[in-house]
Length: 162
Ligand code: THU
Image (cartoon, rainbow, N blue to C red; front, side):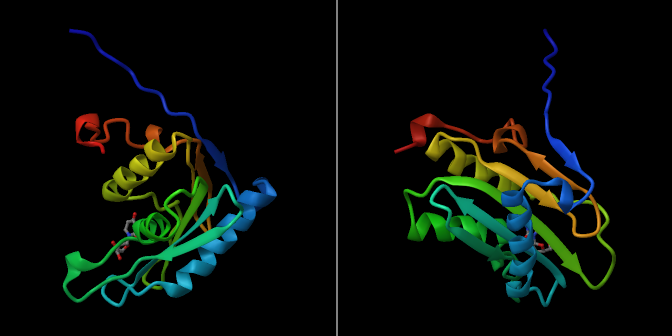
């Protein structure tokens, strides 16, 4: 038996002003994406902005449904849209933020396991890391250099890959 220790390195920023211009813009766009959220059930809006290597920005927001499990998280809305419309795109970075009128969000909202699994697949597909920025509008910002570090035990089975 042996114990194995995994370390994650990420950056923590106090506010937007500490970010570089590209990241600051991306966070601002994630905040704008909140406007597209359809979340009448949870009343919890999530927005994401994804920057492609081409410079193009793709927005996404959570889309709920009265059949609750039929809804989809903001991250997957944006990622699957890229996959469907621009399958050879290279993703550089994604910023994610959330807002609700029900309570104050004081910590960055991090992505659910299902979204992380999808992010891992996009990263593996493009063979280049995807930066993830978790942006708390009234709090700190976390920046992770690669999705892999967020889900080290992602499901991967190369023999199932095409
Ligand atoms: N949600 C996201 O959009 N992304 C996540 O990573 C976690 C949760 C959404 C789903 C649902 O519409 C609402 O937040 C409350 O769970």
